[in-house]
Image (tube, rainbow, N blue to C red; front, top):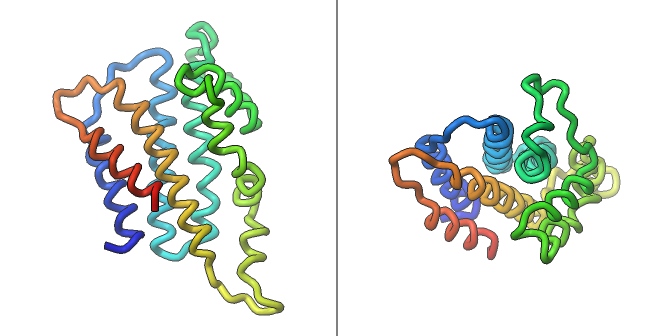
Length: 200
């Protein structure tokens, strides 16, 4: 099984589970569960765009995937119920990704002791801005002298695919905590698969 297929198989498992997932609607989870789901959708799209060699479009989804995960966690752990209005158009979240990471790290008990997100994602920040705003650095790397080669950096691609697995597995594990459906989910299988992919 080639690498691309391994990542696609991982997302098939998540997709199967999310189709069985049920939750009881609440004041805050009406915001953070769709955001977590959207983070996973972007991660799935990254993998499929890579398979179709749409590298620039793939890079453009890295930031939204992370943003949606962080915003979901910020709403869940940093917001009081009283802060959330019925009209969500008036809701304000921190715009800077570094601020979101720091606030989520401080609010989530499992992350706080070792600044988990900042430690894991800190080195990504400079490239994250580039990928989001046109990817000038990644485009420049496709040139040799004055020739556009369209040669992709496979090591960099693999790191992007691993990043999407990392974000989607965090989002998946947060979502399934609230499953009230009767169908059995594949948490162990999905977590084992994520671990295997992250070790590639």
